[in-house]
Image (cartoon, rainbow, N blue to C red; front, side, top):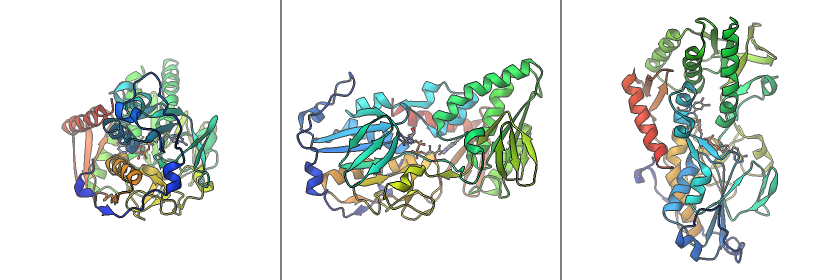
Length: 418
Ligand SMILES: Cc1cc2nc3c(=O)[nH]c(=O)nc-3n(C[C@H](O)[C@H](O)[C@H](O)COP(=O)(O)OP(=O)(O)OC[C@H]3O[C@@H](n4cnc5c(N)ncnc54)[C@H](O)[C@@H]3O)c2cc1C
């Protein structure tokens, strides 16, 4: 979590008068059956604060606004899925160490706690002139102040066939949906004595954790030893970019122990049942899982928001859009102050408290706080069984105790949102 030491003051112009009065007179609605906090119900709605996406920073905004409601502000959450999967626990969920309810946050309940309306919908665009969020399958949602925490998607632009024949590791909801079918298919083939070939594309932390989690769970469920062949395509760069050599060595040892084949080739094309590599090889694949680097949701390009070269929303160090002061962005979707931050849940988590305070300050016309990203983050990578690697700069440790530490940290974090 960001401590006060990570934030400093930046002058913020108060919201324009039109902004403060735009939604005046709109009666406060009661979300679901859960009672609204008393303070929030007492004041008329003067402003609409709309959160798009149930990402790691937005859950903190909801928690804080639930603990201290903002009078005169109507809060709305628009999220594609009512359950937010905590990225730190996703590999453990896939590996079978957590039940879904242990690793997921019920956004509907959290929104009710915050006195927020919950719209289950995908945002498909923004009309910034009229201050509307355009949604799939529901009328546009008006806002005075908007915050985006919608994550990222795997980069498929240069991978023909990926959209049809590969399974993206992001968003988590889609991966989890496909996961059950994949487990059943592998188990059924195993019963018939058939081998299942799986290919994970991407040698970053996500790809390695995914491969090790899949191996752990599927090997436990497959009756036949050797019924599973798992390959990770790491491309031509190094394994675990951004991590030190010591962490890389430990990850290689874990992959080796799990009999996962590493192939230093780039995937260039997907077809039904096959992954084609740059070297001209065709790898059989019952499933090809894409954990390539993160790309921005394409609809942002039509919004008029200032974006970086990769299509992520450019913000200043207060997490506010550099082009539209009524829009904030955090997590994977944000390109903060032209710093190339890793697309990792740790950063989204740390941005949460600063975002919550800056949204409140923006509504009140007070100076905004600066978000100061940590220079180095401790990464805890799970390796399949209850075992993990800690990677911090050039240092690395591993063992069951690292898993227990990670488990304790992750459980403590997610407990705050229940
Ligand atoms: C396999 C895997 C393992 C990982 N492990 C780790 C790890 O151990 N530690 C770590 O720090 N990071 C990890 N990451 C990275 C991490 O998942 C992301 O960096 C993190 O989830 C980003 O958080 P976020 O808040 O930006 O968005 P997300 O957590 O992705 O949340 C975005 C939310 O917005 C919703 N949404 C998306 N589009 C829309 C839309 N148009 N309208 C409405 N709602 C929308 C989604 O449904 C989702 O709930 C992992 C990633 C993968 C793929």
